[in-house]
Length: 156
Image (cartoon, rainbow, N blue to C red; front, side, top):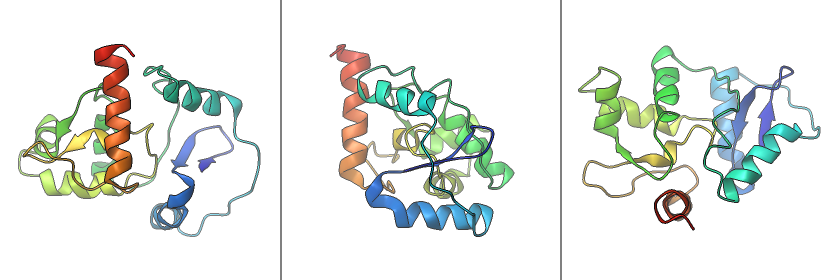
């Protein structure tokens, strides 16, 4: 599922089975949005398709716009700087933002991210190196990380 605004900015992306979660996030960030069914912008669908075909750079040029607090937007911007095929802990992400003790706040912001995959919240893991919370489920998080690792590290 994809939500864009009239300027072609990505506002939300999620998997079909996560529609209720996406609508909750949209409501939290925008109130009750008025959504219209229309064809998704070709440039966005092509970029997403290219990502799944193995082009890890395909999503970098997509323009995103989100509501949320200043801190949430800072976290979401930082997420886009995590290279495909790598992970970062919540604590390391907090440190990169100059907020050493904000790992829980980073986790909450990560969980409120309305733009799955393009804003790669799946690349954040627990301090012990284990996969932790992901709105799309841990199996999907594992698949996404494995997909990126196979392409970037193994070249397959």
